[in-house]
Image 1 (cartoon, rainbow, N blue to C red):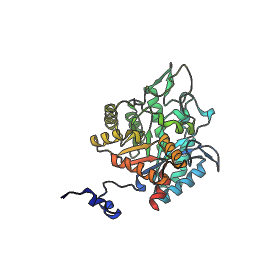
Image 2: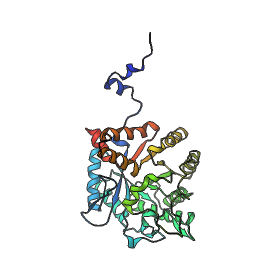
Image 3: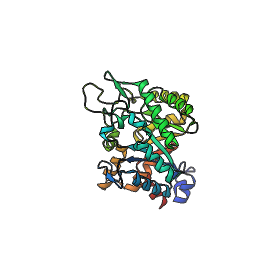
Image 4: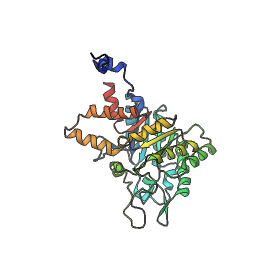
Amino acid sequence: MIHSRNRRLRVNESVRSLVRECSLTTNDFVMPIFVMEGENKEEPIPSMPGIFRRSIDLTVKECKELFSLGVKAVNLYMKVSEDLKDNTGKEAWNKNGLMQNTIRAIKDALPEMVVMPDVALDPYSIYGHDGIIENGKIVNDATNDALARMSVSHAEAGADIVAPSDMMDGRVQVIREALEDSGFTDVGILSYAAKYASSFYGPFRSALDSAPKDNMEIPKDKKTYQMDFHNSREALNEVFKDIEEGADIIMIKPGLPYLDIVSKVREAIDLPIAVYNVSGEYAMVKAAAQNAWLDNDKTIIESLTCFKRAGADMIFTYFAKEAAMILNR
């Protein structure tokens, strides 16, 4: 006779919900948002069905809808005009730049919305790299100084948390010191501590035209600063360094193919962990759902719940709005 039967705790949804180990809510989501110049403008991103580039006014409208659904945080990216790009990234700290004006507009309309601007030079670079290039190489320390200026300008505009995604060595410390020196002691740093050189970023780069340019004199990819996807112990090394330098939240990117990294980091640290459900992951689910190969809603909720099960506290995901609608139903 069988005395121990695990199925007793699966007999119906009420029992299953009582013993459930993790749950997904709208409080877990951060919605990445693409912003463009203009007014009352909206452009679909073909490789990311349902995702758009929007002008500031429509971005604010979208943020209001997100907040009403329970999504309380947004992550901002700018589609920068070609004539504003150079090798220094100086447009990134223009007090009246697109990013700074967007931050102010959102915070004026929704003071309680958590605004996390992306801190990286690739949208502002003529080369599409996250750093300044000298003699054919991405230079680390000069890039850090630029990232610090960018972060301070975001804080001045009203950002709650800055999110450096560049993977330069030591940049968290440089940014933290710059924020402290400028009086922004309450502005947090969400550090992309373990960001891998991944093939899953393709749709995102097409959305911002931020892929590395085809130029024989510069690196053709980001492998000299983003992590090698073969490695996992290296991720812990990166995480510990960023914590020592003053990071408040640790990001792991990409998401679904790197759940082992999320779990490993969760076991090692007590700080909040963010995970990025990146554009390629989004595009794959949408493509399969549009062909009726997957159930759209069920796959979204299952995949996002996997991040929580692995140990993430927050999820950056292009599914945030759609997932909030599903959960609210």
